[in-house]
Image 1 (cartoon, rainbow, N blue to C red):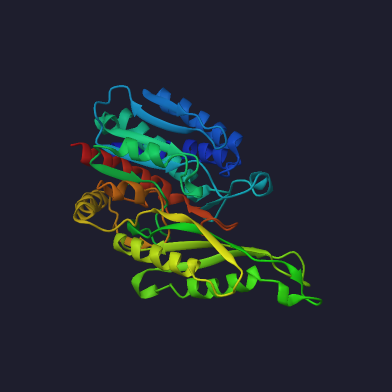
Image 2: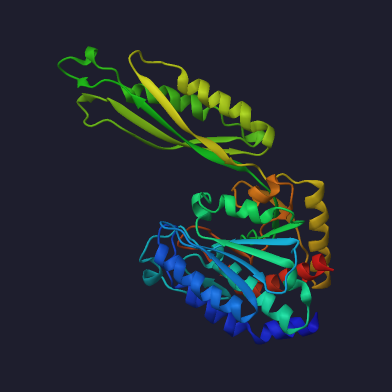
Length: 380
């Protein structure tokens, strides 16, 4: 591995320059132009390595990329990453890429633009050192992961068919752990219709949608069970037109997280029961939504893949630990299909989705070397 490590060290400044370039492009999930600019830069780099890049065009969201080497024959590994961030247009100009005290900062620097750099250079160095594992991968880079992958979900699942391993490039946890379990989840929207009336002149003629929703919010929140890994959070409510008017309409957005597949149906039934129960006469309620991401549960296949990654880490002088996390990702999709899946294979960083988001610069080289080693081991 000495030759591979030396080559990566020689490319460090080149890697950081490319990272700066893509961090300084706004690529929030709804900024199609920015995402497509990044995907265009990536396309050029992959094609220079001999990869075939299929651009899956989207009208509203950014385009997705499906990538594999021209010499690939039924690759067994699917690698998944995303090009979108959570930040609005103008963020990159306001706080562009910077480096200080061994850390790099900027919008999306760890979630997950550093991972895109890691992937490119892991494959570059494999090819330049004669390792053929790069021919055993198929890559999906999507543009809407931060939205729950609504347009890329079917694409990912299609490409994951007949794959043995799924390597997901979300960032490692701040302590360096990779991710072997994730909570699944989804979102529901609750709409309540009441009847408006003047709250001073004839309040008795009104039926408050807000009051009805308030009862439901309390009941929904009570479905949370932290010990079982179930979280139900009413994170947004809207309703009414004026303080002196009985509200004719109200709505709530509900975020749901679960830890086990078996929790899905019972929880859906409880949500539906709450939403179909009337507390205030004269109101009507409609609920839409679903649990879209199946939990990524640690399985025997996961354990076997983890063993390979830990062995690769040992050879590189890295101690690899694993953990479970509450957030969901595209790892949930491949895991639900029965593909051995490990997430958190990106570099180390923290404060995801915030202005303090950072990358530990030294981890960019370490995780690039680890990814290349893991790909090669799985390909042998």
